[in-house]
Length: 411
Image (tube, rainbow, N blue to C red; front, side, top):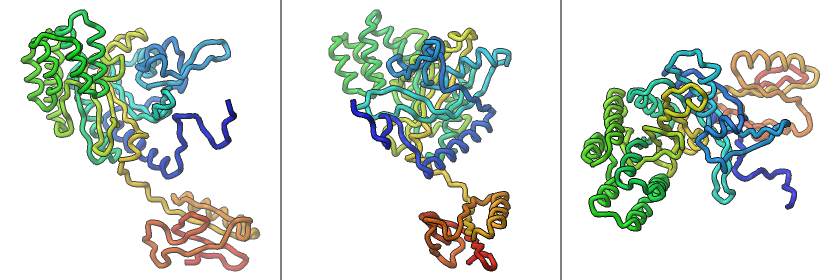
């Protein structure tokens, strides 16, 4: 295998240049501020975790984990999500804290994908976990907060699709009893949004007409309150009916939040995380074909760490949102101080004073190698968004020159 060139990087990771980093940090700041306003406190967890604890408990399949061996030969993993690490903390360091816990986070996570898949192996997430509340109100709260967070991030148009794992499990269990492989094939089609494939699998199964009609009718169960009413007419188990009643109550709470216009009940929704036990949802921006937000209820995860508790939450795909988010950039005045060697102390003291006032200040020795000549741009337009002066590829709102004579602002 040939040695990689110095400018190459592994497949699935990327460099973020200054303008992208500024936007990413702005999104992070606005979203975390929004979450803080809802009572969620930020938490940080390690980048690496033990495979036998968090790695096994995570929602990521074993083949997609980045595994390492430490010096003792113990297998550790790069975190593939933040939910499992937070479950560990809630069951250990926060075990004396009463429920409910409201925690937020922003972190990079890692997933190993096939090189030809073209998916990111490292990406950023910003999310929350609401631990210790099993109610429809808790599920509605995280959905409403996800909507508020997308607005805070500057995503202009989006829709939340909400489903329930319990309903699908009940429906398939009732209509295809004991046929686990067939159930999994149908669920996989729904997960991939492959409705043509879903119908093809149904034809292969050679089902009786009433059963076939119910399973095909599932694809039409998408909309508002009426979807819940239609689902309750199906001949399903009490567990599936209870799941629909949970969604109905949650829908009412979302109405009280005033956010139903952003939500679509979609009973074909099946979360792609193995630990989901109840409500699941995904958020889609109108300009993108993949979700920018996902979440759901995971009532069994904390039991794996010794503190059984219901929980629900979501994560924003922060790096995906870079393409569509319309967040305003923080306006910061940029200044350039050019000085002769003999006036170094005066120049650096001036730079310190301006930085204390909130300006971004660059200093430069006049005549140094590569310093170039100062070019005026947009002269006379102090309000210009690109600055009044261009120098060495950068724009400045203010330039101060301290040469061998009297110093001052050339403007």
